[in-house]
Image: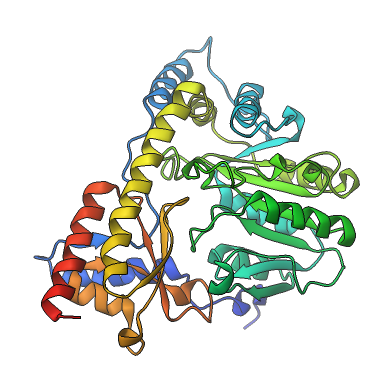
Length: 398
């Protein structure tokens, strides 16, 4: 029987996306043990609420859409000027970076922006493993060549510009990082700038978790490093920091000087044929979340999440687990102790403690001895999980 051909690039990807597998396991456990109160520390979703400033803006914008005189139809693909202005002002306040509104592209979060950016380049894409799985999967689905470089616990899982030849590549950096929770310092970013100048490479900097980083020694934006405007694209998101996982809002910044201006022009052209722009009401909420009032609310939320991460780390370290992250990020990257090397951590925590985690293998083939915990559910959930961990291991005398 004759039929259309299917994109076989998908066959290069894993059979199932890790978070789909986790949701399936979660549903199976709930069906088999409806009496159990499962604590979900696996998928990095938030428990809300939206910042009050964003809620007020949403209400006003929705009312405006119900009036013929103030109704908005199709908007600009790259975003309304009021939203771009809010993003530019936020960068000026938070990192001192001067971003032009013409360099900002408003979108529906980070993942779709990553896909568009990868589609816009024709070069090898460097991903440091363990890594957010969407990086590799987006690249493979577009038939891009991916170079994976293993990060080491000896270096604190910081991506370093060593061992790469001087040929132009798109280099993916995430800071604070998912899944390891580590953050890149100013000295390391200066090394990356030097490498980009020598090689002609461009950095894609994923700053989705920057609001959780309160350390002045770590970069929150790649543009805090003088000279990076010529060599870096930044992707930002409000999903975690402002609880927009269900609302969806983010942005891509492409300075006009990156790759001689060709990358920005290509991205603009691709956007015009495949995207109609983020909803007007969501852009109003986005602008409000990035205002000074919204920023204060998000900072308070981020502080509570970091406190929750600390609560989770304590009992794990007491019983021999090695914990990375948590200080600058909502994620803990946890290495199993020797006495658990042959135990499947996912099944162990689910079956014995009623805690859902994300197995390290979902972020890299060599991360079987690790797992990720998310503190995004807040302090109450973290406290209960910490209690279960402590009670179990004390009783087990481990």
